[in-house]
Length: 100
Image 1 (tube, rainbow, N blue to C red):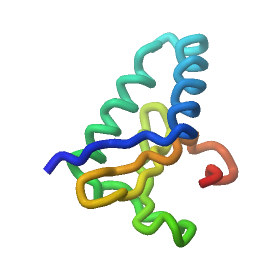
Image 2: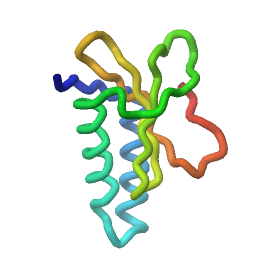
Image 3: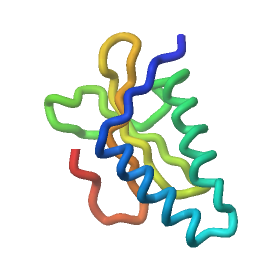
Image 4: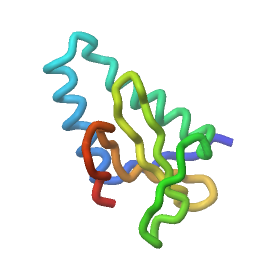
């Protein structure tokens, strides 16, 4: 069963900022967008694929999926039986996790 994805405002802003930077600084300008789309497809079809993450009580089931080609994580959690909420997109080299 394919789940519907709901992208939080915070995650959408993080994606837009990272995509803008990627297009300006990388030769493979469309790689970031392609990898985010691939990651979204994976979590929509296989929501258990990511690694479980310790999360606040209001975010039960939080997971993150690593996208090694771009070195970003997609943080997501179930939001009902047929919806996955993307809560953050965060570079793996940052020393701290995103504010959730």
